[in-house]
Amino acid sequence: MLAALVVVLAVPISSTDADAGPPVSVVASSTEEPTTPVRLRFGGDERLVETRAATVGSLLLEQGIVVQPGDSVHPASSTAIQQGLVISLRLVRDVIVHEEEPILYRSEMRYDYSIPLGQKVVLQVGANGVTRRSYEVRTVNDDEIWRNLISEETVVPTNEIVLVGLNIEQPLAPPGEGQCRSIMRVWATYYTAASAGGTVTRTGTGVFKGVVATDPNVIPLGARMYVPGYGYGVAADTGGGVIGAHIDLAYGANDVYDWGARYVEICLLD
Image (cartoon, rainbow, N blue to C red; front, side, top):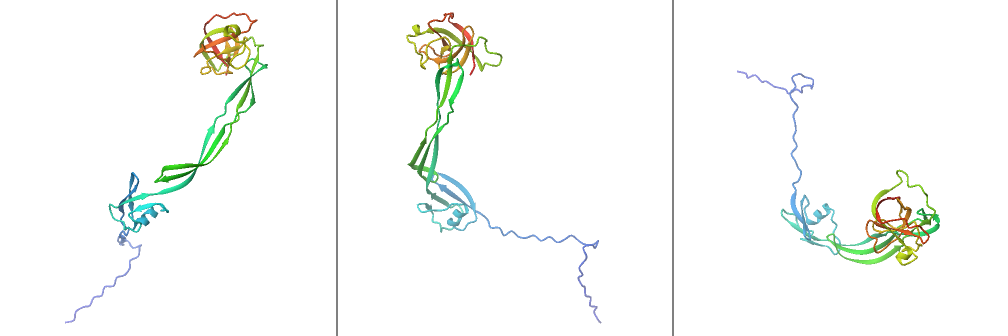
């Protein structure tokens, strides 16, 4: 009896064939190498690092750490990486550090009898100075252990010079609305050259109406003000008894002493 031989040929099926089955997915196996946890110790600081490096030296390069002469690494750079390894580093660096320290300029008041009372004119614009220093600095693991000054340069400041007028021809009208920088309630007394025991104020001016003694910590010298019942004045004097919110109003020898000690709200103009 003859057996029938059946040959089955595998024929590719077109992608347009309605009976086409789902495409075969190929899953690539992962070849990514696992990481190994080690610890980097810098003095008293320690951090955990996951690495694929084979040796301590390649790990340091991986971390961007360049070992220089004078540094110490333990264990040695040739040591193989293994889990739980602790690598101690002592990195010594010598660098040049430049620092600048500003020197603030001062404002110098000069009084001029040709300028109307309290008016200010900037005679010289101020500019800050600076001290520049360069140091040789040594650090160990980013901690500074010593520094040595190698150069220093100072640029002196230019002080501001302001002329303050003391011409006693005062305007009669009080300040208009919005002209006062602030209103301050003060205890106001008066004095003369005779009562003060001298003819020259603390700033070198004469004693006459329009000069006001103040506490410079409260109202700075050179400040202009309007005192109701007295008129315009400029802070150009100080006094041992003038402390805090207290002003002392000057009168010249020929002025009428028309002031009685009292509280008053003054207008500070600048």
